Image (cartoon, rainbow over all chains, first blue to last red; front, side, top):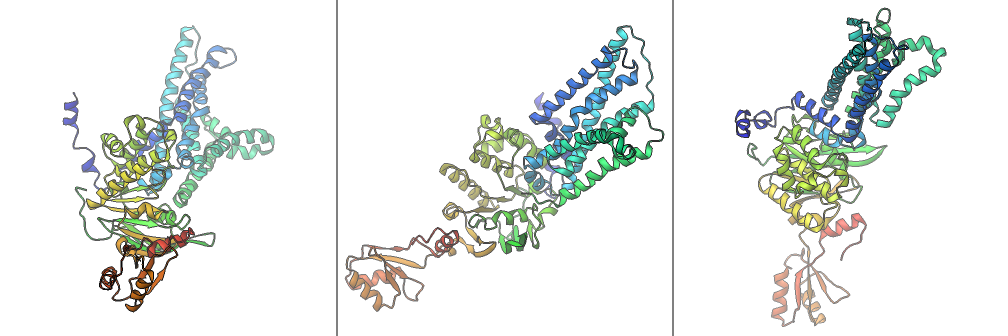
Length: 260
Length: 310
């Protein structure tokens, strides 16, 4: 068995890693995926995310009169469960290297720092897509339980709902990535990530007009609920503000920052 | 080392590297070169600018002026640096929650070397497999240094850049490190290491670059820098010895303990000449040897403010 493995393994690493060959992006991605998921904190958060997603499905299952008994409604609950804690994992993918000072090793291993940040962004995207799949499985299981209990479920899933579900999770994760990329500090990033919606909730009445453009908790929820029409521009603005802008600034900051 | 061609070309160069923080110059016009087969000690008191210089060479800090190269190009232009140069800049800059083995596995994947090399590397630096499975947060500084060395060696580089690698090592650890680096250099590798302790590097390095307040104050082969300019000689008959030395035109001083220190930079005066003078004149000499204190030591002690050992 092991003999067969060594036989089929095509003269590994050495040939592909001549000193003059740049580090392939796929390898950076694998390394960053590993670093993002191999710490105690990230494993706990992923486990708790799974638990929270399962737990939150109890809401539509138990409160059958106050919650719409539809496929879409169940799917939205799983998206909310997934995005409570998982963005912290993506924040930490970007920040823990600074707080633990492993950037010293990382950026001497790959001095093209933007490539490292890109690999972290893509690794977080992979995490988001796995979350999408996990949420769909949990939703399907909950729907099966509801159906087995004899409930009449509205099979209302259409493309805008499903796309909205996927993009909602992706947007939340990438917002965490972007804030982490900019701030380089776990605590500050978590505060910013979770405080922003709270600030808009408190200021609600005053800044409602503005919030419809810049409050991610408002605009991302439209996405989740499939309310696309009329909100396209607002969604793009808030995504630009909370994902594209901090990520771009974060890459610039990362490239310029002195590593001590 | 297999695929590496060793030439006499310098593998590390620093050319007028300069860096200021808030208008305060920390490194000023630092120049030096490191060649294959040699171990260069980058020596200076704490705060002299050693770490800043090493960070500029490894692309972590941008110099205000000047340039540096590793293997012929700026560090940041090396396609896959770990295959060319192993670095250990700060053994405390490791993720405390990862085990030593996981830390190395990440480095191995990045370098593109097989996972099996991780166990070899742990063994090579004397970390048991039990230690490899412990979290780095539980490591002593000496163990972190060993792990850092293992990480630096993983990509099988021909150059090493190490910042204070002996910190936290016990005497046995320092001896081990010395053998490892000597062996690395003897096989054609280039080593640049920093230290704030002269005696720590004295037995390890063959080239020295001494830095103080951001500027290079001395550099060259260890043997030249450590060459003593004086011999000490002792005789029960001090007056006779003094007369002899004066007659020979030597410049000398008599220490309070009765020892004469003779300057041998004066032409015609050396150990053999003194011995001959004593023999010819029947003056009993009970001690005749190179002075312990060297110009470099005096220089270094004056820099570190520890007072001359003379």
